[in-house]
Amino acid sequence: MMLQDKDLLSIQEVRDLVKKAKEAQKILANMNQEQINKIVKAISEAGYTNREKLAKMAHEETGFGKYQDKIVKNTFASKVVYENIKDLKTVGILNEDKENKILEIAVPVGVVAGLIPSTNPTSTAIYKAMIALKAGNSIVFSPHPNAKKCILETVKVIKEAALKAGMPEDAISCISIPSMQGTTELMKHDDVSLILATGGSAMVKAAYSSGTPAIGVGPGNGPAFIEKSANIKLAVKRIIDSKTFDNGTICASEQSIVVEKETEEKVVKELKAQGAYFMTKEEADKLSKFILRSNGTMNPQIVGKSPQVIADLAGIKIPENTKVLIAYEENVGPKYPYSREKLAPILAFYVEKDWKSACDRCIQVLYNEGAGHTMIIHSENEKIIKEFALKKPVSRILINTPGSLGGIGGTTNLVPALTLGCGAVGGSATSDNIGPMNLINIRRAVYGIRELEDLKENKDSNENNNTISEDYVNLIVEKIVQKLKEKIN
Picture 1 (cartoon, rainbow, N blue to C red):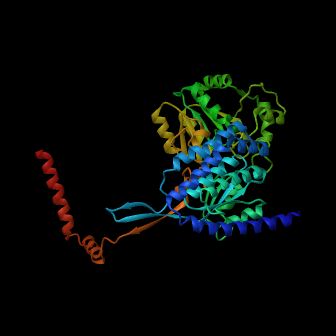
Picture 2: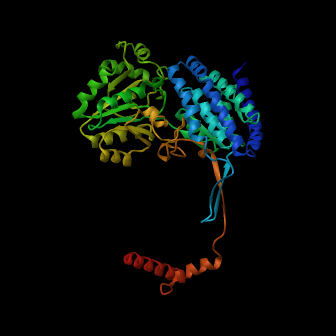
Picture 3: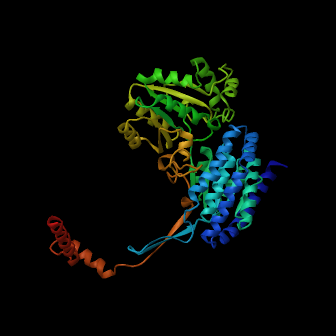
């Protein structure tokens, strides 16, 4: 098949899928909450039942991460997300405020375009299908070409289960001939109401510039500050747990460690004791050449790979039991690979004179890359924790928890999600962990409570300082009487 033919076939497939998805969504929009919930439960159960098979497929196809951890991700996407959303009211009247005479009504957005990355392919597909259907939307997936087979299989198993539970035939679908042209057609299609984009910066920017409303997630580059009051042993354990989970492919995982000079020795000793390998300057220089490609983007050769594979790639020798590779770093910027996002078990290590300098360094790292996403602090000092929370340009400040699992809501009480909004500072439409409520609009039916004459009276009262409305006088009298009663009692 010629490349041109593939592009044309991909575009035509998208048009057909969107047309069918639109018709399916019309049926979904007329379903009640019980019917929607039954479909979502079926997706959850199918994802969970097939969690191991899909994890192994994702690992074999992409070569990223560890299939054992991908099983955990699939469990999280199917079970943890489901438990969080199962009782949400997403159909019909959401709220009736009788006092203020306002009705809030859920309105599905329509057809959702779900862009799926290669780093978390099966889990993201399960999660996005559930939150889209829970909100009464149909979804058309655009799979990353390097994870096409496992994503198509995921869509197949959850779709079969959802159909048995009463889902309209084409409410879940997936492009089988993925291409840039096909994805562009999907994002710009007039009948697509919202893009749910998870992936690289270029793809997220394309989603926001498509002309279709989008919720996109940019890169993470979260620094982890170990403040001197922290339980250092536990902080190191959490960081290594996070950075080694699926070999660092979750974007909320730590990308650098920042410490104060007075605790440097203790932290380094503990990191080494728990399996971290501090590279020499020569070794770090060798590896730095493999972190970024010539165009400044992350090298896929290191993504989700073990420390041993990465070391072999760079031609350096490391102990057999190494869990994480660490490089001392003093600089931050586009040309300094260790200061950038590294979806692999590689960390930068910064040493600062005190917590205020560490605070400044974290801000510098985030504005270089990852603004709006996530950062982590390990500390027992509430004052410093609050200072960090007030000043950091991120949507999630994670305290005393692993970054990757805390950011997605696994080890914290954040909304369980695999799409993490980065707020305006990160170029995102929201700072939320994305759930069904982000995929509905709210129609408000409101009763009139004032007449034109009431508005005029208020206006006249404001213009004439010598005139006080009767309602205002009665309010003052009521407050005075209440105060007197309190004194008597």
